[in-house]
Amino acid sequence: MSQRRGAPQKETANPEMVPFSQVLDKPSGGMRKSMEPMETTRPNPNPSNVTTTATPASLDERYESEAHNLKLKHWKEGPFATGMTAPTWEEEYSRYTNPRECCMHIEEDSMGCLCFSAIACSKLGASRVGNMAVLKQSTEWVEEEEEDENGETKTRRFTRPRLDVVVGPYWPMLCCVTYPLILGVSAMTLITAIPGKHPVVILVWACCTIGLIYSLAMTAFRDPGILPRYEKPPPSGENNGWRWSDRAHSYRPRGAFYDPDTAVIVEGFDHTCPWTGTAIGSRNMLSFQCFVGLVFICLMIDIVLLTGGFP
Image (cartoon, rainbow, N blue to C red):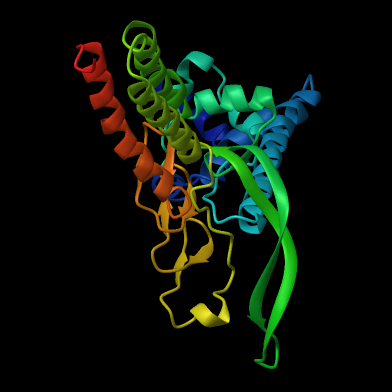
């Protein structure tokens, strides 16, 4: 009985079988040889299945590669020194499959929550510079010095976009917290405490309140000093502290820093203020200082007026 059991095994033995150790050493070769004969001897009942499963993967990879290349090109060829973000707010909004979980989409070197800007700015058609929303822009003429091939310095005159009205990534706090507090306290003072007061008191209160609202607007809606992109430092700045920024793919002068919240390089960068919704730099520093000073002045005047301190 044992010989009958052994004979069929000897007849069906595969002379091309390799040891199990070699199969482990070469899984892509030995294992495929032992498995392919059973599959290739049978015709595929549905040959189109092979193409339908492989083609979508290749199309997705090709689409992701092209999208990444376009994003990289837009980042390197943009007129401003910004971080690598989505080119438009529409594209930013399309990344959020579930609007309720959009604030959970956090990336490195990002403020983490751009869902409000993505939703509102995509509806308004606002353009994007880093994480800043551009509500209005124009064109300006600029003259810069550059060196030619012979090493001589010449003046180049060209046009570039100018940011007229721009808001930072924390504009929801500006619109929903800062302005309502200021306008609410001012309205309560105007209704309950201002009537019957001396004209000088009314004039001082009105000037301070209007100045407070105006200085906040000039801080929040003005370009804080977003630096243009410099692929090489100007001749006057080569030995004057200009450094390369990998995050913005641009040279920056001394005192200009990359702000990860706004994703731009800001000249004279001081800090990012959530109360004003934007970064504080060289172009809105004066209005920001006026805003901070007038906050305390208006607060003291309103407290005195509401408590009946002025006749």
